[in-house]
Length: 149
Image 1 (spheres, rainbow, N blue to C red):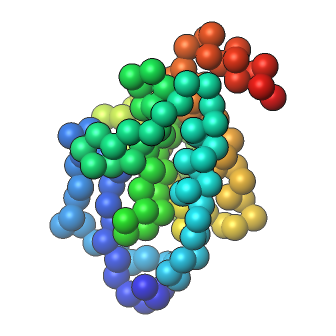
Image 2 (image 1 turned 45 degrees about the vertical axis):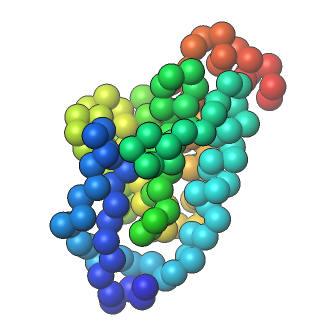
C-alpha cells in the first residue's frame, strides 16, 4: 500500500478492543516498512518472567498472570498497545499514537502505529513494552526481571 492509498486501521481493541472496520485513514507508509517489528516486540515481551502469549477475541496479546501487558497487531498495519504510566506523553508525541479507546487511555494505555514511528526512534518501543510489563506485573516478578538484567 503506497502513501497515497487508503488503508484500514484495525484498533487493538475488541470487547476491550473492537475492530472499527468503518474507519479509514490515509496510510503514510510502504508495505513492509516496519516489517518484523511486531515479532521483535513480541519476542521481547515473552522473555519477561512468567509472560505468555494469548489470543483473546482473536487478537495477539502477551500476558503476565491473567493480565494483558501488550496488544500486538499486524493484520492491516503494525500496531502496539501498551500501558505507560511514566512515558505516556512521550509515546503520544509520535504521529498516529493516541490514547487507547474504550476507556483504557485514561488509565495510561497508548496505541501506537509502528510504521510511522521514525526508524531511528523505534528502539523506544522496546522500552515501552518493558514499562508496560513493569506496570502490570507483580512486584516479585519485576524484581525477577531486574535480577535478569
